Length: 85
Image 1 (cartoon, rainbow, N blue to C red):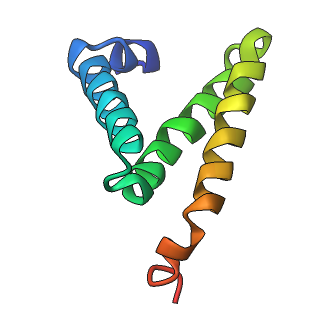
Image 2 (image 1 turned 120 degrees about the vertical axis):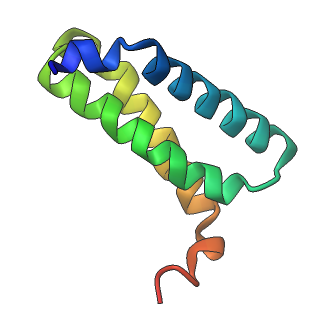
């Protein structure tokens, strides 16, 4: 299965959309926000890798996304101390 077939499959895009909406709502209500930041990091890494390898023209937005995600991980760094022991 090629990359484009897999990424454009309706179930893949639906899962990504649901994940992003739930994470956004979680951040708005500040409930499980630290967990959502870890989950969203995988989306950010995938976006940056995609734009670096396949679509260099729009890499700026992916860099902004990963920068904001790293900032939010830094904000919630005290919540991750148990994971990093």
